[in-house]
Length: 398
Image 1 (tube, rainbow, N blue to C red):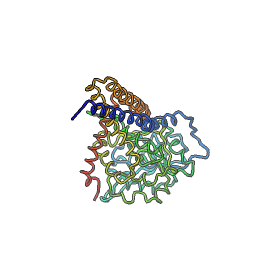
Image 2 (image 1 turned 90 degrees about the horizontal axis):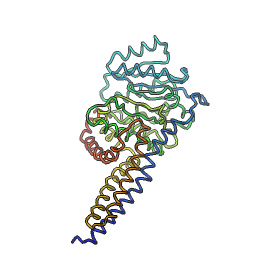
Image 3 (image 1 turned 180 degrees about the vertical axis):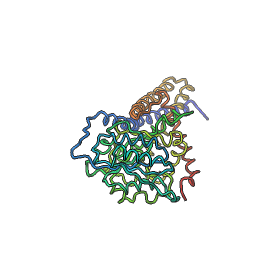
Image 4 (image 1 turned 120 degrees about the vertical axis):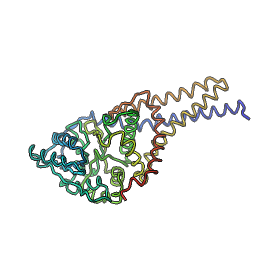
């Protein structure tokens, strides 16, 4: 039998639960979210010497090119404008597509603009049981003559002439073997219904894996902005064991080679990369579920932290509603007002932390929309995990 005493007990338990969850969210969770934005702003604003001592390492930049020769030409011009000693840098373009213009672009720039440090190679088209993306990277690393390799795609967009210097700077420390840079899809490559939500999800994902790396638990990088020592690639086996997967080179490879003491994270705005392929819309519908599949056997500690926070957002909302409903039934107005105030205050603090990080990542969703999108995200993730299991045969080449 439901009695006023039982309703009051349930109401106070729900109120206490609301407060406990809110306390965790505005302390542990908020600090992790804010850490990404704080570090981006710190690195962006900190004085940077483009000629560090000791001298910057010699770098081989490996660009995997598909079919977009115009994008490749734009990227190559930006690379040769970098503030870096030209003798200590080479660019290797791997033609992974069927566009003959790729070769024409590289040949023209190499000879007409006198770029002897620009080279071109290609992946064999007859190999069907090996991921061409991973094979292209492997060929590029093998062809590299310098000790540090940086990965880009033809669709990578550089916004600063300091990108190379900033990404290479940590390698002045011999103990550093991997540098993870920030990379996100270009909003301009997306269109149609849901564009703002997809932009939010991509920014959330970037904040999640950058937060893990900053917390000393790197498990993912991005092919559009990643650097490592050439020797480490071969000593770790490269992409062995995952060559037959269509995707996953970012997650599987990074989780294998990265350790807290050998990895640095460069998130300065000057080193940020936007990429326009795959499009944000296509990545959301196809590539993101594939990432759920490829990362299923990787360490889940950091992902569970953000997953738990998403679920606790829902639980905080539910407990606040229960407490307020109990207060209405009992006409106990403090029991109605207090959980609502706690809920709104917690969401305000969390929203402001996310807003700062999104702004640092150059993603700016509406301030009022952030709480609702945080509530929607776990539902999106559940659906895409389901799709990743359903489509698992599509993620293998054989």
